[in-house]
Length: 245
Image 1: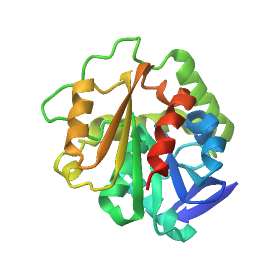
Image 2: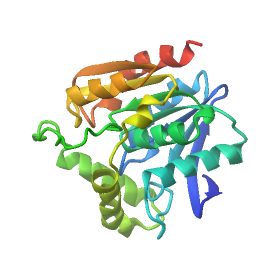
Image 3: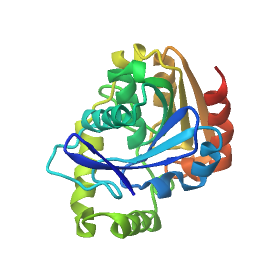
Image 4: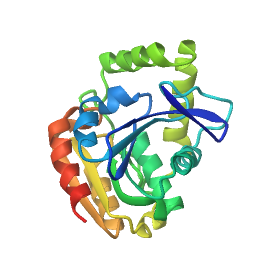
């Protein structure tokens, strides 16, 4: 197990492979394995994969520090500093996608290419998200898998409910999204969403059109939690995006 002391945390991360660095940032309540398991070895075949578990997630203990998207992004930049990595590509899912965007916005020189999957970085002011039916929501089995994974590896297995509430408050209530900031983001960006994702597709298209240098992929028949459960399709999208110079 590898930890880096950053910003008052012992940040857990795993590395695989060699080549151009690719940082993987998981979704809320997930671990590296739950989110990216089938993708790790294929991605590491041609690049150095650095998978991070953010504050409170997986092996990384929570602290009394306020949890914000900006703080999590600062942790990622601090980890790159400790590893001596000047620039990396970033692939973030859901919460990890928001963190990846925050890194690219705050430290654009540190990001080569950006992959954002199922992350509502754009939240149109005054517009409510479409009501989510049960067919779009995680199932009870999903929630149980998240809890089980946490309790298996977390430093304080009993902290799950408090940590989950803290994370939900940050993502749902405290983060307001970006608009003008996205217009200024010059990093080549690939957006990946499911057609039955949490974000309404019109909002996804508006976010795509805000970004100066972006591509958009929509996976058919795919919910929010289903996006990274389609590893062959995801690899077919991100591999050429990362490989083209």
